[in-house]
Image (cartoon, rainbow, N blue to C red; front, side, top):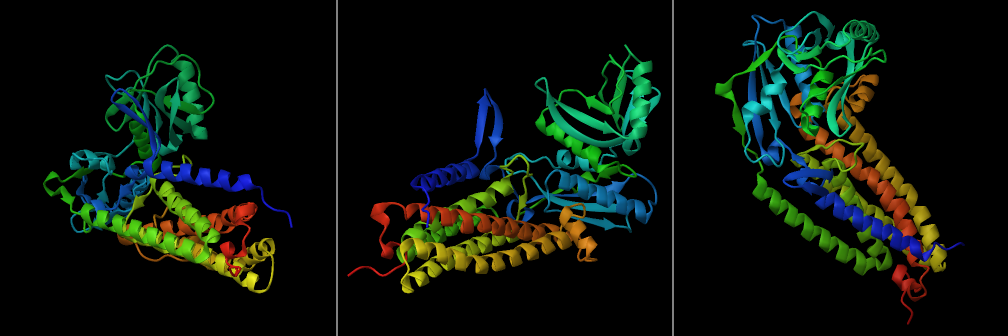
Length: 456
């Protein structure tokens, strides 16, 4: 039976330690007082209302007697705007009797001087984007308007500047090409509601169906504008009732969060010591794999990986983390016990490791795949309506509760799903490679170090 190279353990262990450090501490560069976050860490996590608190805003429709369908559309657009900002712990409720929409959501972790008015302003904007002839002083003849002509928006960096790129529909592409041909040397102004956000000069005919909004953007403002455009325009403007803007106090609080963190660290240390004492080498490997699993979960929550957005972490989300870590411990215990059983059958070190991990594979897969399915169902049935999980539930005709519990159940399902996936990858594949690699060292080739009996 071919042995695994000794260097494999060190390569995996170093990668785990570096990944763990970055996922918790993050990495940022500084230019004077400007901070550029390269890798997000735990400090960048957006905590839920139950942990950090947030804001409650009451929006009033700026029209008389809006229809129930328009109120429902406004509710859905507000939800989409919140989701586009990676805020999944929210409550949006309609009060049809008074034409009001009540919204509750958390704020960013690093916002010490929270301004509720500024936080809700973009939620209530109609966000009708139009392209018009002429400069910023007054609207001229309209060229493009909203979703009829604009299919999507995204923030980009070009020539060192943040810009918003618009992809036009087939109708918008045709109209824009005609306008830019006709208005060469003149300005086309871009308006969001009644505010001119850009007024570039037309230099060439634009026929590729792509338009750029330039201006005094930074990363956040460019993202916010793109998200607002993508969410669509409200059927009517919503004005926030300043007299009813209020800060929502957390039900848990930062002090309790600190106690939970301390308890988690103590529990983690106790588990690691027990695993090493009981299983020796496999226990040491389990310590590394569990550490990597914890780091991976927090990396996905904070938005560590560029391809995944950050996530709102709530108390039920923390429960999902704890449960998934327990499953990670269970996977390592199953593998270690199976290896020990193989030693009792009289097999060699290499044979016991190979057969033990092979026997434990089925049980670990069964348990984690079941958890993955449950997590997907929870995220689809109780989460935002525009996610792939919700789409899957719709296919099966499942449509359960509304948005009032989105944050609680969705956060629990999300952390449980990520934990189960990492458990499958780390607890099965990488743990086996590390144990086999360590068994290649001569000074470690003693059966009792892997679960066998100690020589007399």
